[in-house]
Length: 189
Image (cartoon, rainbow, N blue to C red; front, side, top):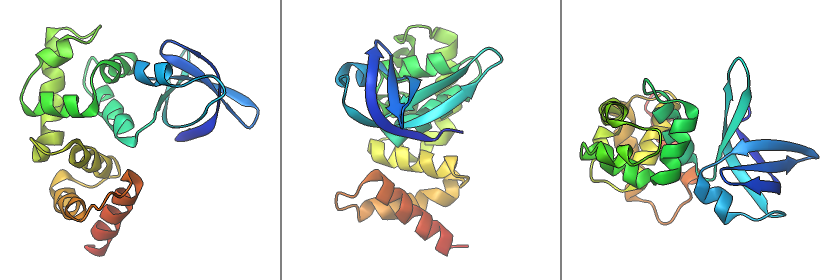
């Protein structure tokens, strides 16, 4: 699996770019905000997800780990494929997704092209249990809990560690917050 890429943007179009890494160009589908913000020749690092289908191997890329985590969670919802999940992340921020799920607002997802009323409601229902602990919390808490869950920790186990780490935040990077959570969780075993 290709978990991340760092290189120079050699080409871009709406919703995709070519990232050159050590002489190899990788086509990566990205949220619209990323493709509009970068320029050809710019250095860029992306967290990636490789989706394998019978007819294609497709890379999806995100600047923030929380976007990748939400992308994977959205893909886990029945009826939501990778391109629909990417569309959701192109139209809604991670905080908007968390707030929509917390407030049971399926209309936020209905505004995303390709998501109808039934799928929007299914997204809210499916993600509600995963983000429930952080209703009304800041998006970092939601992202950090989602990251811990993607690493195999249950919500019930990870939540106290996430809250403790965020209480002593002091402008740490997301990667540092993850390391601190893992250290706390590892010491509890």
